[in-house]
Image (tube, rainbow, N blue to C red):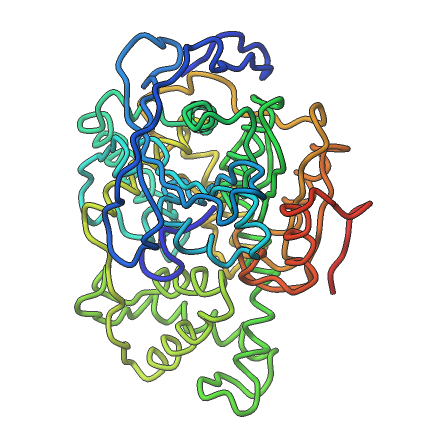
Length: 493
């Protein structure tokens, strides 16, 4: 799963559903969509070639003739029409992220042969502005990062987490409208197939990142015959029962995999933000500082929340481990806090964006799969997690908003299988805080012969063209441009 940004903002049943086997709705079954009307995209800093349109889709796929919602779509056409193969859909992380600007952004990092072969297409998933959007009008304090990821109290109590879950759920029931009930991974996949049909494409290729790998794998399961070359990058655990609960629990392993890399960096001679003389000293230093801030939080004017306590430090640690380039953010915070000071408050995203992200994220996670309602289930998990993984202090086993969500899931979570075309390439960093290698291996196992996996000896979230290495990047680029995959699973040192 991916944050809104790496720093601050981080943050319906269809016909034929039986035991996770889905009969997809295709263009033939739903009618031929009207041609898209492409216009200039709103926003600044976009490639002038990028254009935007909207695709109308059912709010509720169980009622295809009922109310419709709009899905915002963007594209930059192939740079060499004579070499054009089709469409490469860019699927963002989240839940709560969108790829609408990605054809102008990360898409331009793609090699020329890939940009020649495909129209680069982005979209804002259902609920995400500027698509038909949702918001729960939650209390501002309940949208803080340390509330959305459920850090227990300093003594391990989860009482406030359960109270937050009830307040957020009540706000979504009161203010979220009908659409909030129909935001889910399966409906995102159905929307993608409507986008494909509206583009006039028989098949589409895709590059999904983080939570986008879950959408990509789900689309490849529900609409197998509509898939071309599929790249899944920084891969979610495909647990078919617990869905995003497995993602939350993965932070235990992800932090343990990644913190040693931060410790080596933070103890390196010559580092202007050096925290200790040896890597072995950094972990206990962090734990002592977090415990001190639990007891004696520091005022932090302009920040959200407005004080630096132990959980704010832990959240900053988690956010910084997404990308080694962000290690200095955590180190500066620790250096200041050791002196009883705070750095300048980090910038905050607009409140409207936070509310939108909160609503989409909560709806997706809670509508995908049922979560326990009893506090006892979380209390037991938090105690075990705090003992085994003190860096994450019980957060990965704690109660999110789904513990009080007012609606039950409308259908079973996606189930990934080994049935379908062999046209998928997984790329995965060995050390990834949000989607650790252990979960990616479960997805690889579930896909069987359909996939080949490239494991990259690198640190950070987002591998391809970001935090990976040249070997991994070359393997993915070759696959997208030519269809050639490694003959077997590959390890890139």
